[in-house]
Length: 75
Image (cartoon, rainbow, N blue to C red):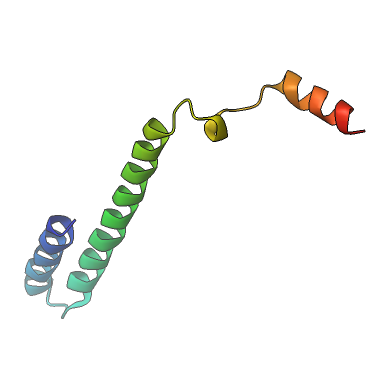
C-alpha cells in the first residue's frame, strides 16, 4: 500500500523537475497513488469477505419465487 503512492510521488517530483512546475505533479501523482491504494484495498476486502461468507444463510440470495410467496403470505 505504500509502494504505489511513493513511486508515483517520486515520478511526479522527477516530472516536476523536467517540466518546471513546483510540487504540482508530485501532489497529483501521490494523491492518485493513495486513492488507488485505498480502492484496491476495498475491492480486495470485499472479495475476501464474499468468499468467506459464501453459503452462509445471511449471504444467500432469495429467488424470485420465494419473494413472491413471502409477499403473498404477509398480505
